Image 1 (tube, rainbow, N blue to C red):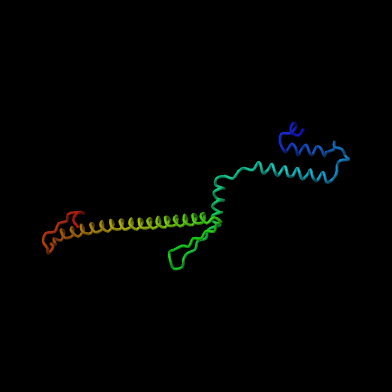
Image 2: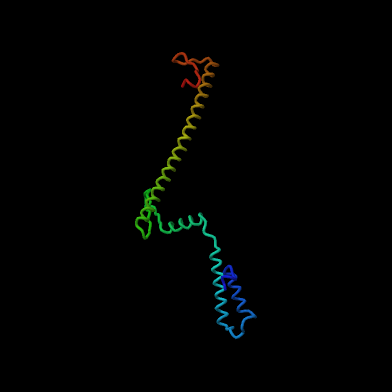
Length: 168
């Protein structure tokens, strides 16, 4: 009878409400039956809410896993060194080892990349400074050569020419 008349659980709850409504047999209405039906309706509503809940997104799953791993890991600096102590607590020792080794490897790569970046920045700065100083020296040599030409000053070593940037 339920299956023919009702498509889902919400209709079942409505049917049960109708069975205990004004058209029902007054002799059968007992407060405990009403409480049971009310509880059943509440359970059906909860069940429907659980079934209609959307599954977690990929980002939510990812964040959940990250938080689970964070809870297993502790990292401490070793005093007066550049070392870190990585500890992982897990019921599976192989999993704990894999997590600790992966973190250590990622830290090494991160540290190396930072050092390389700092070295590259320093090298770029030094090259810019070298170019700037070389340009300033050439300009000063040209000014000095022009001064000597204008004032008719000769060097003790003999002839001296200004040959441009190639002559240093």
